[in-house]
Length: 201
Length: 201
Image (cartoon, rainbow over all chains, first blue to last red; front, side, top):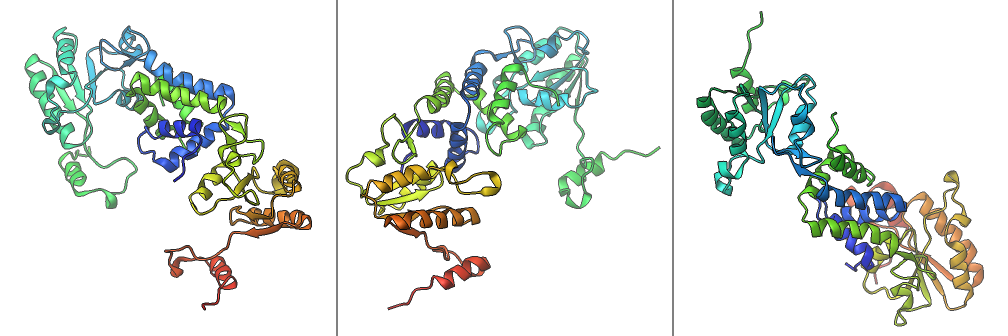
């Protein structure tokens, strides 16, 4: 296919770096960007630069912070410092924050254990979690990794290393999603839901 | 839902300006951008600024040019100046360029006639097309608007204003797409394919 004029082709190539964006979608985005006002285009460009310049790793939870200081959740003294929810990525912190009643802290693992990909405990932020636990304030770690084999083995590993330190380690419950339909639940989920059944009082 | 830290939220909001991008996709893009190298992020930002700064309207065909001068197709003296293909948007120029044997020129109409949306001949680049025809070099205008009611009425309108000037006006043929399956062709397309049937010699 013929190439577009250079400035457009350059933008198409940039959009193609985004996940799941092929040449048709990238072209659609580039032509939409052509209709941006100058302010919109500059704001967008500035946001791209800003994400590299203004986003830092929180020195406490390993999540994202908008300064070199601990993030707003780690700084929030009203939050319960004795409970830590361990998640895979920084995005998951915001996912868990939707559960508005959770008022504990977080720890971002930076992935899951996956020996086949060469990801062992040293590749994740587990040392940082052990250090936090070592400070003696944390009493429970809720492991909120994804319900995948890697998420499961990461949870088991954390239980193995954290429980000897006197910390309770729990995992999010498996089961049928609220509002879901049993008919469409897969067998493994149903089995887990059976195993985790609760007696009605 | 809780907001992300400001630099990320700003980028999410920018990505949401793109067509068909909702908050989930925008978030996915923003987190992917977080993993860009500095050069990638700067190149992307520069491409966004560049599209506003370096893309101009070709003074001849009303398409896109990378300078204030006529675009590369209009400047190409090897291309047949007597045939002009009228398309809806600048993107369609590249679509038509895939037909590698077409060696004529283009004219970008900038849309289609749509009285209901207040788009009449003055809102399109029809005056510019009439001026080009008035120079006396053009002998045929191939109307390649989309096969929609608006595309059809634009083609009829062009035929009505151009033919009195002694220019042949043609329209892309309707019919079954090559490699398509008759079973899945809609009735209107089949009817047009019947009407446009050709005798086998």
